[in-house]
Image 1 (cartoon, rainbow, N blue to C red):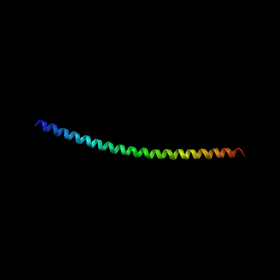
Image 2 (cartoon, rainbow, N blue to C red):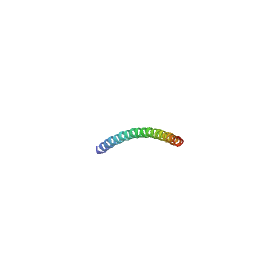
Image 3 (cartoon, helix red, strand yellow):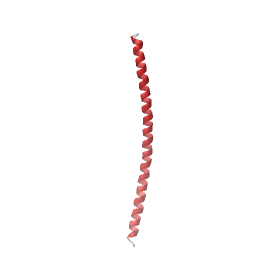
Image 4 (cartoon, helix red, strand yellow):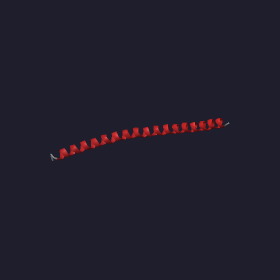
Length: 66
């Protein structure tokens, strides 16, 4: 009797752990997606910053001649 009760309790604990692992996997996927998007945004910001710096340098260079 006690053995079947222990087995039932262990089954319930295993199911709870499986549910938690599934939820953690979903959260990890969401975090991975967010990081991937942030990496693309970072690249865009670096490109814009570089372009702005180049335009600024060109304007400064041209301003010396006037």
